[in-house]
Length: 264
Image (cartoon, rainbow, N blue to C red; front, side):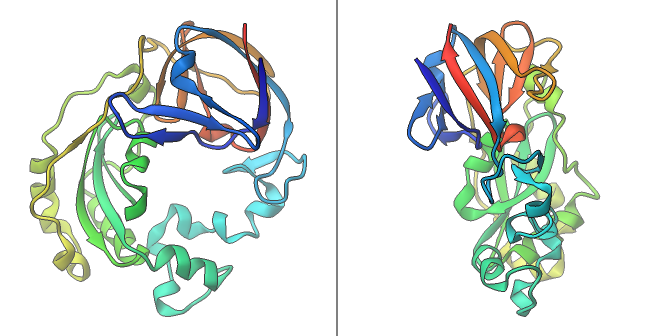
């Protein structure tokens, strides 16, 4: 049986361990059921997630012209402190920006390769933590818009990391941390505008991933360089498939690529 479709980030179901699903237009694959099986991944073509054309993917699943035009790829996506919808100011599409920016957002701490601070919409918890491969996480602040979350993240990243080391995350070379203590330690650095939104009493969320074998020296699969790959699947963590030969495949980093996936 061969499944073919355009890659988008895997859907997840919060359970212990996390359940992963690769969703195509007319089918889906329950990835957990492929563990310990040899699968083949074949690159077919590109398909921009916005215009649908077979054009080289630039970033985030979009071709270059779409990336610099659509609101889904604007700078405030990656830098929430640049959000302006709360002021009624348009960047690319004010209606879309109001829809996304003017809703509850959470500033959180997650431990995936180290303790890091991040921002996400409240509706994306715990999905955001799962996608980052965090084995523990905690909310610090819940604010009514993306701008307040962004300026809080900017203030806190002077005192804690804001990036994940994907290799360390995949090797699972991670120490447990007391995130409640981290939350209390960072409280003093929250900007005045967001201090009233501090979450004083909550506990860590712990996450287990379906991994049978962690890679010792992860090597990333690039479909442009290796359009045909075959390997035994031994784990899934974050948005990565992990294979027995230390190859790892970042599904989210390959959005917009049409692939054929089959059991060997």
